[in-house]
Image 1 (tube, one colour):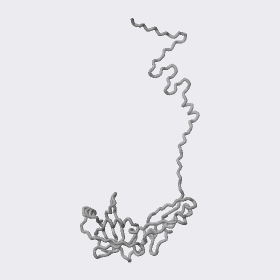
Image 2 (cartoon, rainbow, N blue to C red):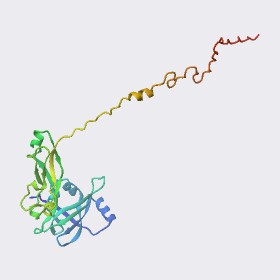
Image 3 (cartoon, rainbow, N blue to C red):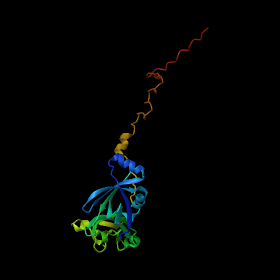
Image 4 (cartoon, one colour):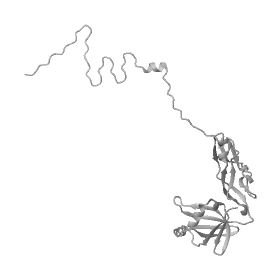
Length: 255
């Protein structure tokens, strides 16, 4: 059975963004209470109390007692909205319930036995949680705080499905009741190790190596060919065949 929580709410008449902003500045949270064949009611809740409740996992799956003036209703937390980056509760939706009408809501999954599963203890696998909560249908009195998923019998590469979860009396999994797929909720899998392989540079073929080598008499890159002057040097005069190399005339010195 779920835990018991009591909320003290105050009716509010002002509507709109400006009114909600003023309400939050005064330490209140705008909320709406609806359902069970009654007219929706705009109310406000204490912000600090609501913030503490939302931090409690049991609060999300409990039947709440909501007191507004002299009236008392049983309700569930249907939705809530937080500020994008501040720890501020912006709005809360509360749905009235009837003791004779079934409700459906999400409850958390608690996994146990993963540390003693053969796939983990013997084969060195790891536990993977594929779901964190599941939608169930039941009467308010049968609403559980959570559902337990037993992983203790799993071997390597085996999984537990929705149909394997043990349900309390009067509780059904909504998707299975409507013919949905029997999805896996937890598994034991192998650890995958990804190795980085260094790229292999192929050696050039014999023909490619010969083509890359400079031919005889050709200059290597950056070198001048035989008989040619390097860049920035004056070309040297060559003697013709059978002639003596010319001598440079001595320069006359000035008097």
